[in-house]
Amino acid sequence: MNKKLAAALSGGAVLVVALSGCTSSNEDKGPDPKLVAWAKKVCDAIPAQDGKIRSANASIASIATNSNLPPKSAQKTYAQAFQDLADGYKALADALGDAGAPPGIDDGAKRQRDAAKNLDGLSASYVALKKKVDGLDTKDQGKFAKGLKDIAATQAEEVGKQSDSGTEALKRLEKDDVKAAMAEQPSCKAAAASATSSPAPQGTAG
Image 1 (cartoon, one colour):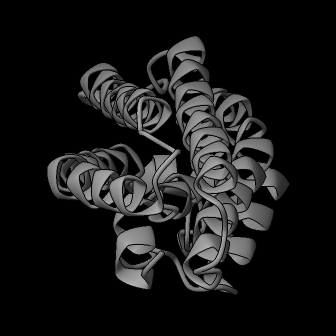
Image 2 (cartoon, rainbow, N blue to C red):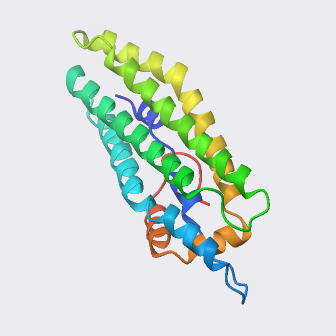
Protein backbone atom coordinates (compact mmCIF):
# COMPACT_ATOMS: atom_id res chain seq x y z
CA MET A 1 0.00 0.00 0.00
CA ASN A 2 1.40 3.42 -0.71
CA LYS A 3 1.71 6.07 1.99
CA LYS A 4 -0.25 8.65 0.04
CA LEU A 5 -3.23 6.32 -0.15
CA ALA A 6 -3.08 5.53 3.57
CA ALA A 7 -2.84 9.23 4.41
CA ALA A 8 -5.86 10.00 2.24
CA LEU A 9 -7.96 7.45 4.08
CA SER A 10 -6.84 8.28 7.61
CA GLY A 11 -8.84 10.36 10.07
CA GLY A 12 -8.51 14.02 10.97
CA ALA A 13 -7.13 13.87 14.50
CA VAL A 14 -6.96 17.66 14.28
CA LEU A 15 -10.65 17.60 15.18
CA VAL A 16 -9.81 16.30 18.62
CA VAL A 17 -7.27 19.09 19.03
CA ALA A 18 -9.87 21.66 18.06
CA LEU A 19 -12.22 20.23 20.65
CA SER A 20 -9.60 20.03 23.38
CA GLY A 21 -8.97 23.71 24.07
CA CYS A 22 -5.44 24.32 22.86
CA THR A 23 -4.87 27.38 25.04
CA SER A 24 -6.47 28.89 28.09
CA SER A 25 -7.73 32.42 28.59
CA ASN A 26 -5.52 34.89 30.39
CA GLU A 27 -8.43 36.86 31.77
CA ASP A 28 -8.51 37.31 35.54
CA LYS A 29 -12.20 36.47 35.73
CA GLY A 30 -12.85 32.80 35.26
CA PRO A 31 -15.69 31.33 33.18
CA ASP A 32 -19.20 30.81 34.56
CA PRO A 33 -19.36 27.69 36.80
CA LYS A 34 -22.30 26.43 34.70
CA LEU A 35 -20.13 26.70 31.61
CA VAL A 36 -17.32 24.88 33.39
CA ALA A 37 -19.74 22.06 34.25
CA TRP A 38 -20.79 21.92 30.58
CA ALA A 39 -17.15 21.80 29.48
CA LYS A 40 -16.48 18.90 31.85
CA LYS A 41 -19.25 16.84 30.22
CA VAL A 42 -17.68 17.39 26.80
CA CYS A 43 -14.05 17.08 27.82
CA ASP A 44 -14.51 13.87 29.80
CA ALA A 45 -15.66 12.14 26.61
CA ILE A 46 -12.58 13.17 24.63
CA PRO A 47 -9.62 11.06 25.89
CA ALA A 48 -11.15 7.65 25.14
CA GLN A 49 -12.24 8.71 21.66
CA ASP A 50 -8.93 10.46 21.02
CA GLY A 51 -7.17 7.20 21.81
CA LYS A 52 -9.50 5.24 19.55
CA ILE A 53 -9.02 7.67 16.65
CA ARG A 54 -5.24 7.71 17.04
CA SER A 55 -5.07 3.92 17.22
CA ALA A 56 -7.15 3.64 14.04
CA ASN A 57 -4.90 6.10 12.23
CA ALA A 58 -1.83 4.17 13.39
CA SER A 59 -3.33 0.96 11.97
CA ILE A 60 -3.92 2.64 8.61
CA ALA A 61 -0.41 4.08 8.59
CA SER A 62 1.08 0.66 9.35
CA ILE A 63 -0.39 -0.71 6.13
CA ALA A 64 1.62 1.84 4.16
CA THR A 65 4.86 0.27 5.36
CA ASN A 66 3.84 -3.32 4.57
CA SER A 67 3.55 -3.86 0.83
CA ASN A 68 3.40 -7.65 1.29
CA LEU A 69 0.30 -7.66 3.48
CA PRO A 70 -2.27 -10.10 2.04
CA PRO A 71 -5.45 -8.42 0.73
CA LYS A 72 -7.67 -10.10 3.32
CA SER A 73 -5.46 -8.87 6.16
CA ALA A 74 -5.35 -5.36 4.70
CA GLN A 75 -9.12 -5.38 4.23
CA LYS A 76 -9.64 -6.43 7.85
CA THR A 77 -7.27 -3.73 9.11
CA TYR A 78 -8.90 -0.99 7.03
CA ALA A 79 -12.41 -2.09 7.93
CA GLN A 80 -11.68 -2.12 11.67
CA ALA A 81 -9.89 1.23 11.50
CA PHE A 82 -12.75 2.87 9.61
CA GLN A 83 -15.25 1.42 12.07
CA ASP A 84 -13.22 2.78 15.00
CA LEU A 85 -12.98 6.20 13.35
CA ALA A 86 -16.72 6.20 12.73
CA ASP A 87 -17.42 5.17 16.33
CA GLY A 88 -14.98 7.72 17.73
CA TYR A 89 -16.43 10.69 15.90
CA LYS A 90 -19.99 9.51 16.57
CA ALA A 91 -19.23 9.34 20.29
CA LEU A 92 -17.83 12.87 20.23
CA ALA A 93 -20.95 14.06 18.40
CA ASP A 94 -23.13 12.33 20.98
CA ALA A 95 -21.15 13.90 23.83
CA LEU A 96 -21.78 17.35 22.38
CA GLY A 97 -25.43 16.52 21.83
CA ASP A 98 -25.85 15.25 25.38
CA ALA A 99 -24.11 18.31 26.83
CA GLY A 100 -26.50 20.65 25.03
CA ALA A 101 -25.85 24.32 24.37
CA PRO A 102 -23.02 25.95 26.34
CA PRO A 103 -24.68 28.08 29.04
CA GLY A 104 -24.54 31.84 28.72
CA ILE A 105 -22.96 31.85 25.26
CA ASP A 106 -24.44 33.96 22.48
CA ASP A 107 -25.43 31.70 19.59
CA GLY A 108 -24.16 28.79 21.68
CA ALA A 109 -26.96 26.43 20.69
CA LYS A 110 -26.27 26.88 16.98
CA ARG A 111 -22.53 26.50 17.44
CA GLN A 112 -23.07 23.32 19.45
CA ARG A 113 -25.51 21.85 16.90
CA ASP A 114 -23.22 22.68 13.97
CA ALA A 115 -20.25 21.00 15.64
CA ALA A 116 -22.23 17.88 16.51
CA LYS A 117 -23.68 17.72 13.00
CA ASN A 118 -20.24 17.90 11.41
CA LEU A 119 -18.87 15.18 13.66
CA ASP A 120 -21.87 13.01 12.76
CA GLY A 121 -21.14 13.68 9.10
CA LEU A 122 -17.52 12.61 9.44
CA SER A 123 -18.63 9.46 11.24
CA ALA A 124 -21.01 8.67 8.38
CA SER A 125 -18.18 9.15 5.87
CA TYR A 126 -16.14 6.46 7.62
CA VAL A 127 -19.13 4.13 7.76
CA ALA A 128 -19.35 4.52 3.97
CA LEU A 129 -15.62 3.83 3.63
CA LYS A 130 -15.93 0.63 5.67
CA LYS A 131 -18.79 -0.62 3.50
CA LYS A 132 -16.76 -0.01 0.34
CA VAL A 133 -13.69 -1.75 1.74
CA ASP A 134 -15.81 -4.69 2.87
CA GLY A 135 -16.99 -5.09 -0.71
CA LEU A 136 -13.54 -5.27 -2.30
CA ASP A 137 -12.28 -8.39 -4.08
CA THR A 138 -9.52 -9.85 -1.91
CA LYS A 139 -8.81 -12.84 -4.16
CA ASP A 140 -6.61 -10.82 -6.49
CA GLN A 141 -3.88 -8.48 -5.19
CA GLY A 142 -4.07 -6.25 -8.28
CA LYS A 143 -7.85 -5.90 -8.18
CA PHE A 144 -7.76 -5.20 -4.46
CA ALA A 145 -5.10 -2.49 -4.88
CA LYS A 146 -7.06 -0.90 -7.70
CA GLY A 147 -10.21 -1.01 -5.60
CA LEU A 148 -8.46 0.79 -2.77
CA LYS A 149 -7.20 3.48 -5.15
CA ASP A 150 -10.71 3.95 -6.52
CA ILE A 151 -12.07 4.30 -3.00
CA ALA A 152 -9.42 6.85 -2.12
CA ALA A 153 -10.17 8.81 -5.29
CA THR A 154 -13.90 9.00 -4.61
CA GLN A 155 -14.04 9.06 -0.82
CA ALA A 156 -10.89 10.83 0.37
CA GLU A 157 -12.16 14.19 -0.89
CA GLU A 158 -15.42 13.75 1.01
CA VAL A 159 -13.57 12.76 4.18
CA GLY A 160 -11.29 15.78 3.78
CA LYS A 161 -14.23 18.14 3.36
CA GLN A 162 -15.97 16.69 6.41
CA SER A 163 -12.78 16.97 8.44
CA ASP A 164 -12.18 20.59 7.38
CA SER A 165 -15.77 21.65 8.03
CA GLY A 166 -15.76 19.81 11.35
CA THR A 167 -12.59 21.57 12.43
CA GLU A 168 -14.04 24.97 11.56
CA ALA A 169 -17.30 24.19 13.38
CA LEU A 170 -15.43 23.12 16.49
CA LYS A 171 -13.26 26.23 16.39
CA ARG A 172 -16.41 28.36 16.22
CA LEU A 173 -17.80 26.48 19.20
CA GLU A 174 -14.58 26.71 21.17
CA LYS A 175 -14.19 30.47 21.45
CA ASP A 176 -13.69 32.92 24.29
CA ASP A 177 -15.39 31.70 27.49
CA VAL A 178 -15.97 28.22 26.04
CA LYS A 179 -12.26 27.87 25.34
CA ALA A 180 -11.42 29.09 28.84
CA ALA A 181 -13.85 26.62 30.41
CA MET A 182 -12.54 23.69 28.37
CA ALA A 183 -8.93 24.65 29.04
CA GLU A 184 -9.58 24.23 32.78
CA GLN A 185 -10.54 20.57 32.35
CA PRO A 186 -7.80 17.99 33.02
CA SER A 187 -9.26 15.66 30.38
CA CYS A 188 -9.08 18.36 27.71
CA LYS A 189 -5.56 19.33 28.78
CA ALA A 190 -4.45 15.72 28.49
CA ALA A 191 -5.99 15.29 25.04
CA ALA A 192 -4.51 18.57 23.79
CA ALA A 193 -1.06 17.64 25.10
CA SER A 194 -1.27 14.22 23.45
CA ALA A 195 -2.41 15.72 20.16
CA THR A 196 0.28 18.38 19.98
CA SER A 197 3.07 15.97 20.96
CA SER A 198 2.62 13.94 17.77
CA PRO A 199 1.89 15.00 14.19
CA ALA A 200 -1.74 14.89 13.03
CA PRO A 201 -2.45 12.92 9.81
CA GLN A 202 -4.27 15.84 8.24
CA GLY A 203 -4.45 19.56 8.87
CA THR A 204 -2.82 21.46 11.71
CA ALA A 205 -3.37 21.69 15.41
CA GLY A 206 -5.48 24.44 16.90
